[in-house]
Structures are given as structure tokens and as C-alpha cells.
Image 1 (cartoon, protein in one colour):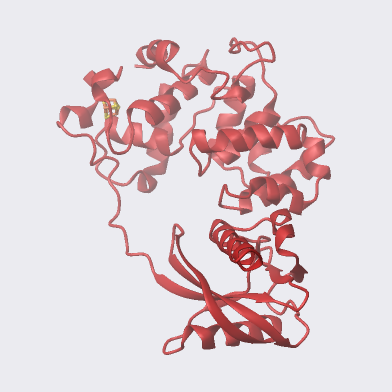
Image 2 (cartoon, rainbow, N blue to C red; image 1 turned 90 degrees about the vertical axis):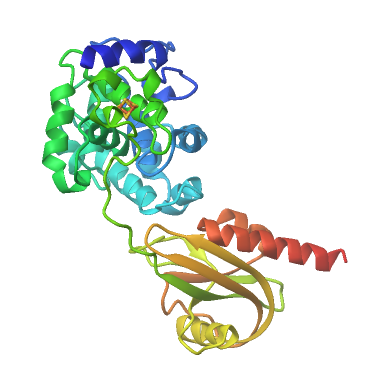
Length: 367
Ligand code: SF4
């Protein structure tokens, strides 16, 4: 099976330096089994690809490598600069962990075993295996979402892969080519990403279709089996875009721990039962910043789904009445000119609020 897969991959794999530049030698060639690659670019790419598709991650990777071309450059940048580069990729803890790991790696040789990589923040077994097999051709298996899907279909596995982790690892290991682990892992990932896709697998082109139990069943799409999804909780968040007499707007930086840690945002919070949105905004800004505001027009409503909840941000323009803003529930607060908001890292939902604010200010300046 490994041989069939490698033969397929040599013709159809994603072996384009424009698609995965971190997998190529400086001369532009794919590395031979005895050649090594620079682990830095591979590590950054692997972390970006943990939750993000290749096509989305690629421009971020290119920009990142131009801004922080070495682990030393990354370690000496500020966390705010790093987060700004990550803005839009989501799962922002990854940026913080990359920065933290860079300072642990500076002045040391690159780790050459699983333990060395897994001791770094944000690196699990599959990321470590992928970095080591990609950079050094180490014979280590991987088990990312693509690989789990392929294996679950090959075997028509009757339970969610997460419940049988050890078994799936043993299958990935059994498939590993001892001489070409780098190529084999890439081939497995490419098969999952290009043919064995979640919704419309192209089995007629798959090198494994004659061995695949899901294909034999007539419809491979039900695999991998999943636990029934629970409905996501829904919350309404009242948000205040507070302007002062100088035309500056108030933003705060979230605490480092937790969802979107360290990102900047417009202040606000969850609407309580029976509360109007105006009352919610007045209360939240008093509790979080110690300020009194009057709530004005609605600026925008933004719906945003995270992996574990759905939020509706109802955003109103507010006038600052009294109280010096204090970071009672955040790291820091700042008055910023609207045109300077671009220098701060905001989560996706806030980026739409900024767009609406700039549009509103522009139309009031040029009615
Ligand atoms: S035959 Fe179809 S379901 Fe089976 S591994 Fe290939 S693409 Fe996936």
C-alpha cells in the first residue's frame, strides 16, 4: 500500500514550491532522503496548518518569513508584533506559543527527537513527527485530521478516531516507509487533502480504492464516524465603541490566558437575561473599565461562530461621560485615533466593527 501511495504522490502530490515552499531546498529541488531542510520554516508552517487550510496559511507564512526570517528574529520581536502578523489566522494562542518557543530555542541546536519538540509550547505528537520527518527525514508517523480521515475510511472504523488514538497511531506507523518517511507522510497528507476530502472524496482516482472498506461500502462519506454534535451555545454581546472629545476611540487588550488572549477589542460583554442592549453596554463598561457612557446609535451587528459557541455582537457608538478608563478586566486600555487601529491585532469580528466605524466616520466627515 505504501508503494502504491508513493507512486501516486510522485505524479499527483502537492510538490509545488509555490504551494509548500518550506518543503524545498534553497535550489528549488525536493530533498532526497539524505538531505535536510531548515526546521524553522517547517515549524512555522506546521503550527499555522494545525487549524488552517494550506491556501489560507500560505500568504501568512510568506509574510511571516519576510518579517521574522529566523528563530532569533522571532524571539527578539515583541509579542504585539507577533500577534499583528498572526491577525486573521484565528486560534491566537498559537502565535503566543510560537513566540515563547522561539525564546526557548535561541542559542540551542534544533531538537532532533520527539521529546525535544514536544517540550515546546504548542507542539503535540503529530506536529513534532511532521517537523522531524519533513526536516530530517526521521521515521516518525503523523496523525493529523487528514490522516485520521483516510485511515478511518480505509478500515471503515466504527468509532470516532479520537476514541481509538493508539490504534490510529499504530496504523500510521505501520504505513511508514523506513527509507522515505518524509515522502510517505507528505503523501498521506496530500491524499487526505486532495482526494479523500470530507464531503466529496474522489475515490475513482485513489491509489487505495481496492483496499478501502469505506469505498467498498458504496459511500465513504459517513466515515470518520463522529459523536453527535451538540448544538453550540448562543450569546449576545453588547459592545461599546466609545469616542472622546478628541475623536479617539477606546480599546482594551484581553488578558493573556483564555480565548483570544492578548488580542485587542472594543469593550463590552454578555447580555444578561431581561436586559436591554443599552443597559448591558452601560453596565459592562462600568464593570470592566469604571467609566460612565451614554449609548448612541447602533453601528453594526456581527455574528461570529467559534468552535464552541456562537456570538452576536451588537455594537453601539457611545459618548464618554465620566471616569478614567481602568483595565479592571483586561491587561490595558488605550485611547487610539481610529486611523491608528490598524496597528493593533484584533480578532475577526472586531475587524468588521473597525470597518463599520471608519465608514461611519468617513461619511460624517463627507456627508
Ligand atoms: S478510496 Fe476513497 S474513501 Fe478510500 S481512501 Fe481513497 S479517497 Fe478515501
